[in-house]
Amino acid sequence: MAEPTSTAIATLVASGVTVPLLTLFGVPLGLRPDQLLAGFLGAITAIAFLNSVPSTGDTLRELLRTTWRRISVVTCSALTAGYLTPVIMLGQPADLASMSTPNMLAISFIIGAGAQYFLRLAIVRLSKKIGLESGAAP
Image (cartoon, rainbow, N blue to C red; front, side, top):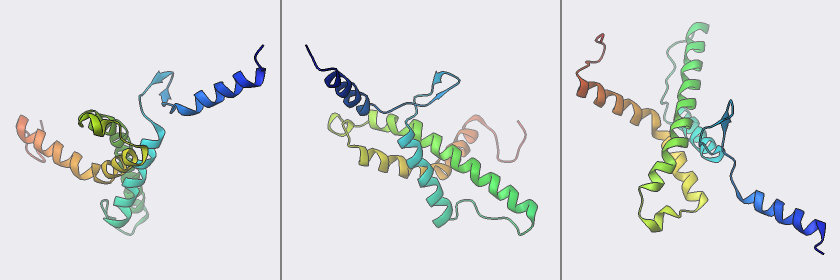
């Protein structure tokens, strides 16, 4: 007869290997928290060191507007990093697809840091492709 603690330990060891995925209202989003955190930190680094979201004034109204812009940039950058990191890893050759966790998190960090610039570039390119000029109403 097996010891009861041996099955409990095996269960704990097996459950510690999996990475939990985030869910919203019971719907799995497919986002890993570690990739979101790395993208978040990349966006914070871009805002702090590269001044990617510059302040526009000294009044309370402008400070609140800048704060909300920075919060939205960080949120969008983290979500972009969370969704694009697995896509980039799937596009790599077989030896790079089995990438270690630190390398995967470095890719998430880089995507989070550059997400605002690259998303803006993609939006401008797509708007020119469909015929919308910047500032023109559709």
